[in-house]
Length: 422
Ligand SMILES: Cc1ncc(COP(=O)(O)O)c(C=O)c1O
Image 1 (tube, rainbow, N blue to C red):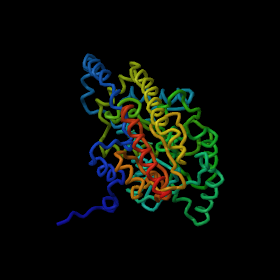
Image 2: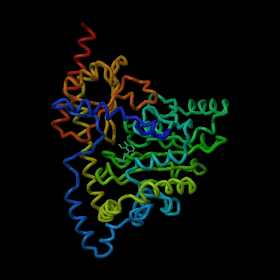
Image 3: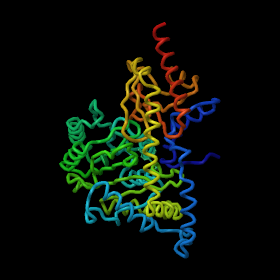
Protein backbone atom coordinates (compact mmCIF):
# COMPACT_ATOMS: atom_id res chain seq x y z
CA UNK A 1 0.00 0.00 0.00
CA UNK A 2 1.24 3.46 -0.89
CA UNK A 3 1.67 6.11 1.77
CA UNK A 4 -0.82 8.97 1.62
CA UNK A 5 1.03 12.26 1.90
CA UNK A 6 -0.27 15.59 3.17
CA UNK A 7 -0.89 18.42 0.70
CA UNK A 8 2.51 19.82 1.67
CA UNK A 9 4.11 16.41 1.26
CA UNK A 10 2.52 16.02 -2.17
CA UNK A 11 3.78 19.42 -3.33
CA UNK A 12 7.43 18.59 -2.67
CA UNK A 13 9.46 17.69 -5.71
CA UNK A 14 13.13 16.91 -6.18
CA UNK A 15 15.07 20.07 -6.81
CA UNK A 16 16.04 20.63 -10.46
CA UNK A 17 19.60 21.40 -9.58
CA UNK A 18 20.06 18.18 -7.61
CA UNK A 19 18.70 16.22 -10.56
CA UNK A 20 21.02 17.97 -13.00
CA UNK A 21 24.02 17.57 -10.71
CA UNK A 22 23.41 13.89 -10.12
CA UNK A 23 23.35 13.41 -13.85
CA UNK A 24 26.36 15.60 -14.62
CA UNK A 25 28.60 14.32 -11.85
CA UNK A 26 28.22 10.77 -13.15
CA UNK A 27 30.36 11.84 -16.10
CA UNK A 28 34.03 11.06 -15.48
CA UNK A 29 36.35 14.04 -14.85
CA UNK A 30 33.51 16.52 -14.67
CA UNK A 31 34.51 19.94 -13.29
CA UNK A 32 31.58 21.56 -11.55
CA UNK A 33 31.10 25.31 -11.55
CA UNK A 34 27.60 24.60 -10.28
CA UNK A 35 27.51 23.87 -6.55
CA UNK A 36 27.59 26.87 -4.24
CA UNK A 37 30.18 25.09 -2.07
CA UNK A 38 32.92 26.98 -0.27
CA UNK A 39 36.66 26.46 -0.67
CA UNK A 40 37.84 23.08 0.64
CA UNK A 41 41.54 23.76 1.11
CA UNK A 42 41.06 26.71 3.42
CA UNK A 43 38.50 25.15 5.77
CA UNK A 44 39.70 26.14 9.26
CA UNK A 45 40.43 22.70 10.67
CA UNK A 46 43.38 23.90 12.78
CA UNK A 47 41.22 26.61 14.30
CA UNK A 48 38.62 24.00 15.14
CA UNK A 49 41.22 21.78 16.82
CA UNK A 50 42.31 24.69 19.02
CA UNK A 51 38.76 25.81 19.71
CA UNK A 52 37.70 22.33 20.81
CA UNK A 53 40.67 22.28 23.19
CA UNK A 54 39.80 25.70 24.51
CA UNK A 55 36.23 24.58 25.12
CA UNK A 56 37.37 21.32 26.74
CA UNK A 57 39.72 23.26 29.02
CA UNK A 58 37.04 25.62 30.22
CA UNK A 59 35.64 23.26 32.88
CA UNK A 60 31.95 22.75 33.52
CA UNK A 61 31.02 25.58 31.14
CA UNK A 62 32.89 23.79 28.38
CA UNK A 63 31.35 20.43 29.18
CA UNK A 64 27.79 21.71 28.94
CA UNK A 65 28.36 22.64 25.31
CA UNK A 66 27.68 18.92 24.78
CA UNK A 67 24.30 19.30 26.47
CA UNK A 68 21.10 20.49 24.79
CA UNK A 69 21.02 24.25 24.56
CA UNK A 70 18.15 26.70 24.30
CA UNK A 71 15.73 27.05 21.43
CA UNK A 72 16.81 30.61 20.63
CA UNK A 73 20.51 29.85 20.78
CA UNK A 74 23.49 30.58 23.04
CA UNK A 75 23.29 33.95 24.79
CA UNK A 76 26.89 34.99 24.23
CA UNK A 77 26.76 33.99 20.55
CA UNK A 78 23.55 35.96 20.05
CA UNK A 79 25.07 38.92 21.79
CA UNK A 80 28.22 38.76 19.62
CA UNK A 81 26.11 38.55 16.46
CA UNK A 82 23.87 41.45 17.47
CA UNK A 83 27.04 43.45 18.05
CA UNK A 84 28.25 42.42 14.59
CA UNK A 85 25.11 43.69 12.86
CA UNK A 86 25.31 46.91 14.88
CA UNK A 87 28.86 47.45 13.80
CA UNK A 88 28.08 46.75 10.11
CA UNK A 89 25.16 49.14 10.28
CA UNK A 90 27.00 51.61 12.53
CA UNK A 91 24.23 51.84 15.06
CA UNK A 92 23.89 52.08 18.78
CA UNK A 93 22.94 49.20 21.10
CA UNK A 94 19.46 50.61 21.70
CA UNK A 95 18.64 50.32 17.97
CA UNK A 96 19.01 46.57 17.80
CA UNK A 97 17.98 44.39 20.70
CA UNK A 98 19.61 40.96 20.83
CA UNK A 99 16.47 39.48 22.35
CA UNK A 100 15.03 39.66 18.79
CA UNK A 101 17.87 37.56 17.38
CA UNK A 102 17.92 33.78 17.16
CA UNK A 103 20.32 31.13 15.94
CA UNK A 104 19.18 28.83 13.14
CA UNK A 105 20.45 25.76 11.30
CA UNK A 106 22.03 27.84 8.60
CA UNK A 107 20.17 30.90 7.41
CA UNK A 108 18.25 28.44 5.23
CA UNK A 109 16.19 27.34 8.24
CA UNK A 110 15.30 30.94 9.09
CA UNK A 111 14.08 31.54 5.52
CA UNK A 112 11.95 28.42 5.71
CA UNK A 113 10.47 29.36 9.10
CA UNK A 114 9.76 32.85 7.81
CA UNK A 115 7.62 31.60 4.93
CA UNK A 116 6.04 28.84 6.98
CA UNK A 117 4.77 31.29 9.59
CA UNK A 118 3.72 34.07 7.18
CA UNK A 119 2.17 32.38 4.19
CA UNK A 120 -0.71 30.11 3.30
CA UNK A 121 -0.99 28.26 0.00
CA UNK A 122 -2.10 30.73 -2.68
CA UNK A 123 -0.36 33.72 -1.03
CA UNK A 124 2.24 35.79 -2.88
CA UNK A 125 5.85 36.77 -2.17
CA UNK A 126 7.66 39.47 -4.18
CA UNK A 127 11.08 38.45 -5.44
CA UNK A 128 13.92 39.96 -7.44
CA UNK A 129 14.78 38.59 -10.86
CA UNK A 130 17.06 36.64 -10.66
CA UNK A 131 16.88 35.34 -7.11
CA UNK A 132 18.24 32.57 -4.88
CA UNK A 133 16.78 29.45 -6.44
CA UNK A 134 16.41 27.47 -3.20
CA UNK A 135 14.17 30.26 -1.91
CA UNK A 136 11.97 29.74 -4.98
CA UNK A 137 11.84 26.07 -4.05
CA UNK A 138 10.71 26.93 -0.50
CA UNK A 139 7.84 28.97 -1.95
CA UNK A 140 6.87 26.18 -4.34
CA UNK A 141 6.93 23.66 -1.48
CA UNK A 142 4.44 25.75 0.50
CA UNK A 143 2.20 26.39 -2.52
CA UNK A 144 3.09 30.09 -2.35
CA UNK A 145 3.31 32.11 -5.57
CA UNK A 146 6.48 34.01 -6.38
CA UNK A 147 5.83 37.36 -8.05
CA UNK A 148 8.76 38.81 -9.97
CA UNK A 149 9.29 42.49 -9.31
CA UNK A 150 10.04 44.56 -12.42
CA UNK A 151 13.81 45.08 -12.63
CA UNK A 152 15.95 47.79 -14.23
CA UNK A 153 18.82 47.10 -16.64
CA UNK A 154 21.33 47.80 -13.85
CA UNK A 155 19.87 45.00 -11.73
CA UNK A 156 18.03 47.28 -9.28
CA UNK A 157 14.32 46.97 -8.57
CA UNK A 158 12.21 49.28 -10.74
CA UNK A 159 10.33 51.23 -8.06
CA UNK A 160 7.75 52.72 -10.40
CA UNK A 161 7.08 49.26 -11.81
CA UNK A 162 6.76 47.83 -8.30
CA UNK A 163 4.27 50.55 -7.39
CA UNK A 164 2.18 49.66 -10.46
CA UNK A 165 2.37 46.00 -9.56
CA UNK A 166 1.09 46.68 -6.04
CA UNK A 167 -1.75 48.83 -7.45
CA UNK A 168 -2.78 45.96 -9.71
CA UNK A 169 -2.96 43.64 -6.73
CA UNK A 170 -4.99 46.26 -4.85
CA UNK A 171 -7.43 46.79 -7.70
CA UNK A 172 -8.11 43.06 -7.92
CA UNK A 173 -8.58 42.83 -4.14
CA UNK A 174 -5.50 40.65 -3.67
CA UNK A 175 -3.11 43.04 -1.94
CA UNK A 176 -3.55 41.32 1.41
CA UNK A 177 -2.31 38.08 -0.16
CA UNK A 178 1.14 39.61 -0.68
CA UNK A 179 2.88 38.55 2.50
CA UNK A 180 6.50 39.45 1.95
CA UNK A 181 9.18 40.97 -0.21
CA UNK A 182 12.44 39.01 -0.40
CA UNK A 183 15.75 40.75 -1.10
CA UNK A 184 19.19 39.18 -1.52
CA UNK A 185 20.82 42.49 -0.88
CA UNK A 186 24.61 41.97 -0.78
CA UNK A 187 26.69 40.22 -3.51
CA UNK A 188 23.64 38.26 -4.46
CA UNK A 189 23.41 34.62 -5.29
CA UNK A 190 23.26 34.39 -8.30
CA UNK A 191 23.96 37.83 -9.81
CA UNK A 192 26.55 39.37 -7.44
CA UNK A 193 24.33 42.47 -7.35
CA UNK A 194 24.01 44.65 -4.23
CA UNK A 195 20.89 46.69 -3.48
CA UNK A 196 21.70 50.35 -2.91
CA UNK A 197 20.59 52.07 0.29
CA UNK A 198 18.50 54.51 -1.74
CA UNK A 199 16.56 51.70 -3.43
CA UNK A 200 16.10 49.94 -0.09
CA UNK A 201 14.84 53.13 1.53
CA UNK A 202 12.42 53.76 -1.32
CA UNK A 203 11.10 50.21 -1.03
CA UNK A 204 10.50 50.82 2.69
CA UNK A 205 8.58 54.02 1.94
CA UNK A 206 6.50 52.36 -0.78
CA UNK A 207 5.61 49.37 1.41
CA UNK A 208 4.80 51.62 4.36
CA UNK A 209 2.20 53.41 2.21
CA UNK A 210 0.32 50.16 1.49
CA UNK A 211 -2.91 49.33 3.30
CA UNK A 212 -1.62 45.95 4.44
CA UNK A 213 1.61 45.01 6.22
CA UNK A 214 4.04 43.44 3.75
CA UNK A 215 6.97 41.91 5.60
CA UNK A 216 10.52 42.36 4.34
CA UNK A 217 12.97 39.46 4.34
CA UNK A 218 16.50 40.70 3.81
CA UNK A 219 18.88 37.84 3.08
CA UNK A 220 22.39 39.06 3.80
CA UNK A 221 24.17 35.70 3.43
CA UNK A 222 27.12 37.20 1.50
CA UNK A 223 27.31 40.61 3.19
CA UNK A 224 30.69 39.94 4.79
CA UNK A 225 32.14 38.08 1.81
CA UNK A 226 33.26 41.24 0.03
CA UNK A 227 36.72 41.20 -1.56
CA UNK A 228 38.07 44.68 -0.72
CA UNK A 229 35.38 46.85 0.82
CA UNK A 230 31.98 46.23 2.37
CA UNK A 231 29.09 47.41 0.23
CA UNK A 232 28.00 50.75 1.64
CA UNK A 233 24.33 50.18 2.24
CA UNK A 234 22.82 49.81 5.66
CA UNK A 235 20.36 47.02 6.23
CA UNK A 236 16.57 47.26 6.38
CA UNK A 237 16.86 46.59 10.12
CA UNK A 238 18.01 50.15 10.72
CA UNK A 239 16.70 52.20 7.80
CA UNK A 240 14.02 54.59 8.97
CA UNK A 241 11.55 53.85 6.20
CA UNK A 242 11.24 50.26 7.50
CA UNK A 243 10.41 51.33 11.09
CA UNK A 244 6.75 50.44 10.79
CA UNK A 245 7.26 47.24 8.78
CA UNK A 246 7.93 43.69 9.96
CA UNK A 247 11.56 43.02 8.98
CA UNK A 248 13.51 39.78 9.10
CA UNK A 249 17.25 40.00 8.50
CA UNK A 250 18.98 36.66 7.92
CA UNK A 251 22.67 35.93 7.70
CA UNK A 252 25.07 33.11 8.23
CA UNK A 253 28.33 31.85 9.70
CA UNK A 254 28.62 29.07 7.12
CA UNK A 255 30.04 30.79 4.03
CA UNK A 256 32.37 33.14 5.96
CA UNK A 257 33.82 30.36 8.15
CA UNK A 258 32.78 26.70 7.95
CA UNK A 259 29.70 25.62 6.05
CA UNK A 260 29.83 22.19 7.71
CA UNK A 261 28.95 23.73 11.08
CA UNK A 262 25.70 24.94 9.50
CA UNK A 263 24.95 27.80 11.87
CA UNK A 264 23.05 30.89 10.75
CA UNK A 265 21.15 33.67 12.49
CA UNK A 266 18.17 35.92 12.09
CA UNK A 267 16.99 39.19 13.59
CA UNK A 268 13.26 39.90 13.51
CA UNK A 269 11.78 43.31 14.33
CA UNK A 270 8.27 41.96 14.86
CA UNK A 271 7.73 40.12 18.15
CA UNK A 272 4.61 38.26 17.06
CA UNK A 273 6.33 36.90 13.93
CA UNK A 274 9.51 36.13 15.88
CA UNK A 275 7.62 34.17 18.54
CA UNK A 276 5.77 32.22 15.91
CA UNK A 277 9.01 31.24 14.13
CA UNK A 278 10.57 30.29 17.46
CA UNK A 279 7.57 28.22 18.36
CA UNK A 280 7.87 26.24 15.11
CA UNK A 281 11.62 25.89 15.62
CA UNK A 282 10.89 24.62 19.13
CA UNK A 283 8.89 21.79 17.64
CA UNK A 284 11.36 21.10 14.83
CA UNK A 285 14.61 20.87 16.78
CA UNK A 286 14.29 22.91 20.04
CA UNK A 287 17.60 24.55 19.27
CA UNK A 288 20.49 24.47 16.82
CA UNK A 289 23.34 22.11 17.85
CA UNK A 290 24.82 23.65 20.99
CA UNK A 291 28.34 22.41 20.29
CA UNK A 292 28.46 23.85 16.76
CA UNK A 293 27.23 27.16 18.17
CA UNK A 294 29.88 27.05 20.91
CA UNK A 295 32.65 26.56 18.35
CA UNK A 296 31.48 29.62 16.46
CA UNK A 297 31.01 31.63 19.63
CA UNK A 298 34.61 30.93 20.68
CA UNK A 299 35.84 31.56 17.14
CA UNK A 300 34.15 34.97 17.10
CA UNK A 301 35.21 35.89 20.63
CA UNK A 302 38.85 34.93 20.07
CA UNK A 303 39.16 36.81 16.77
CA UNK A 304 39.86 33.59 14.83
CA UNK A 305 36.65 34.02 12.88
CA UNK A 306 37.69 37.43 11.56
CA UNK A 307 41.24 36.38 10.80
CA UNK A 308 39.89 33.50 8.74
CA UNK A 309 37.30 35.65 7.02
CA UNK A 310 39.92 38.21 6.04
CA UNK A 311 41.98 35.50 4.34
CA UNK A 312 38.86 34.12 2.61
CA UNK A 313 38.15 37.53 1.07
CA UNK A 314 41.50 37.55 -0.71
CA UNK A 315 41.13 33.92 -1.69
CA UNK A 316 37.69 34.36 -3.25
CA UNK A 317 38.81 37.47 -5.06
CA UNK A 318 41.69 35.56 -6.62
CA UNK A 319 39.35 32.71 -7.58
CA UNK A 320 36.87 35.13 -9.09
CA UNK A 321 39.64 36.87 -11.05
CA UNK A 322 41.00 33.55 -12.27
CA UNK A 323 37.63 32.57 -13.68
CA UNK A 324 36.87 36.06 -14.96
CA UNK A 325 40.24 36.38 -16.72
CA UNK A 326 40.33 32.81 -18.03
CA UNK A 327 36.98 33.32 -19.74
CA UNK A 328 38.05 36.86 -20.50
CA UNK A 329 38.20 38.48 -23.89
CA UNK A 330 37.76 35.20 -25.76
CA UNK A 331 34.28 34.65 -24.34
CA UNK A 332 33.38 38.34 -24.53
CA UNK A 333 34.33 38.39 -28.22
CA UNK A 334 31.70 35.70 -28.77
CA UNK A 335 29.10 38.10 -27.38
CA UNK A 336 28.83 36.78 -23.81
CA UNK A 337 28.35 39.41 -21.11
CA UNK A 338 28.99 39.57 -17.38
CA UNK A 339 30.14 41.98 -14.73
CA UNK A 340 33.06 41.53 -12.39
CA UNK A 341 31.52 41.12 -8.91
CA UNK A 342 32.99 42.82 -5.84
CA UNK A 343 32.11 40.00 -3.47
CA UNK A 344 30.38 36.63 -3.22
CA UNK A 345 30.96 33.35 -4.98
CA UNK A 346 29.42 33.70 -8.43
CA UNK A 347 29.77 35.03 -11.96
CA UNK A 348 26.46 35.67 -13.71
CA UNK A 349 26.69 35.33 -17.48
CA UNK A 350 24.34 36.33 -20.29
CA UNK A 351 24.64 34.39 -23.51
CA UNK A 352 24.88 36.08 -26.93
CA UNK A 353 21.61 36.67 -28.81
CA UNK A 354 19.67 35.09 -25.95
CA UNK A 355 21.02 31.67 -26.87
CA UNK A 356 19.35 29.07 -24.68
CA UNK A 357 21.41 27.77 -21.75
CA UNK A 358 18.76 25.91 -19.74
CA UNK A 359 19.10 22.26 -18.72
CA UNK A 360 17.49 21.06 -21.97
CA UNK A 361 19.54 23.28 -24.27
CA UNK A 362 22.20 22.30 -26.76
CA UNK A 363 24.69 24.53 -24.97
CA UNK A 364 24.14 22.72 -21.67
CA UNK A 365 24.67 19.37 -23.42
CA UNK A 366 27.79 20.70 -25.07
CA UNK A 367 29.22 21.81 -21.71
CA UNK A 368 28.57 18.39 -20.21
CA UNK A 369 30.25 16.73 -23.20
CA UNK A 370 33.22 19.04 -22.63
CA UNK A 371 33.33 18.08 -18.92
CA UNK A 372 32.10 21.28 -17.29
CA UNK A 373 28.88 21.92 -15.45
CA UNK A 374 26.97 25.07 -14.45
CA UNK A 375 23.66 26.18 -12.94
CA UNK A 376 21.20 27.13 -15.71
CA UNK A 377 20.07 30.66 -14.95
CA UNK A 378 16.41 29.92 -15.62
CA UNK A 379 16.29 28.11 -12.26
CA UNK A 380 16.86 31.50 -10.61
CA UNK A 381 13.88 33.05 -12.38
CA UNK A 382 10.27 32.57 -11.42
CA UNK A 383 8.55 30.44 -14.05
CA UNK A 384 11.92 29.68 -15.70
CA UNK A 385 11.16 32.60 -17.96
CA UNK A 386 14.64 33.73 -18.93
CA UNK A 387 16.62 30.92 -20.51
CA UNK A 388 19.82 32.63 -21.59
CA UNK A 389 21.73 33.12 -18.33
CA UNK A 390 24.18 31.06 -16.35
CA UNK A 391 25.51 30.98 -12.80
CA UNK A 392 29.15 29.96 -12.44
CA UNK A 393 30.44 29.27 -8.90
CA UNK A 394 34.14 29.52 -8.26
CA UNK A 395 34.00 28.67 -4.54
CA UNK A 396 35.07 25.06 -4.42
CA UNK A 397 37.44 24.34 -7.36
CA UNK A 398 41.15 25.11 -6.97
CA UNK A 399 42.79 27.66 -9.27
CA UNK A 400 44.12 25.10 -11.76
CA UNK A 401 40.71 23.46 -12.03
CA UNK A 402 39.02 26.84 -12.43
CA UNK A 403 41.32 27.57 -15.41
CA UNK A 404 40.60 24.16 -16.92
CA UNK A 405 36.84 24.54 -16.34
CA UNK A 406 36.96 27.95 -18.03
CA UNK A 407 38.77 26.43 -21.05
CA UNK A 408 36.12 23.75 -21.33
CA UNK A 409 33.34 26.31 -21.05
CA UNK A 410 35.01 28.39 -23.73
CA UNK A 411 35.33 25.35 -26.00
CA UNK A 412 31.60 24.69 -25.63
CA UNK A 413 30.80 28.34 -26.38
CA UNK A 414 33.05 28.29 -29.46
CA UNK A 415 31.47 25.08 -30.72
CA UNK A 416 28.04 26.73 -30.55
CA UNK A 417 29.28 29.68 -32.59
CA UNK A 418 30.76 27.32 -35.19
CA UNK A 419 27.56 25.30 -35.41
CA UNK A 420 25.52 28.53 -35.74
CA UNK A 421 27.70 29.60 -38.69
CA UNK A 422 27.83 26.20 -40.43
C1 LIG B 1 21.36 33.72 -0.89
C2 LIG B 1 21.48 32.61 0.08
N1 LIG B 1 20.74 32.64 1.20
C3 LIG B 1 20.79 31.67 2.11
C4 LIG B 1 21.61 30.56 1.93
C5 LIG B 1 21.61 29.49 2.97
O1 LIG B 1 22.89 29.28 3.47
P1 LIG B 1 23.17 28.68 4.91
O2 LIG B 1 22.00 27.82 5.28
O3 LIG B 1 24.43 27.94 4.77
O4 LIG B 1 23.29 29.86 5.84
C6 LIG B 1 22.38 30.46 0.76
C7 LIG B 1 23.22 29.28 0.50
O5 LIG B 1 23.78 29.08 -0.53
C8 LIG B 1 22.33 31.51 -0.17
O6 LIG B 1 23.05 31.49 -1.30
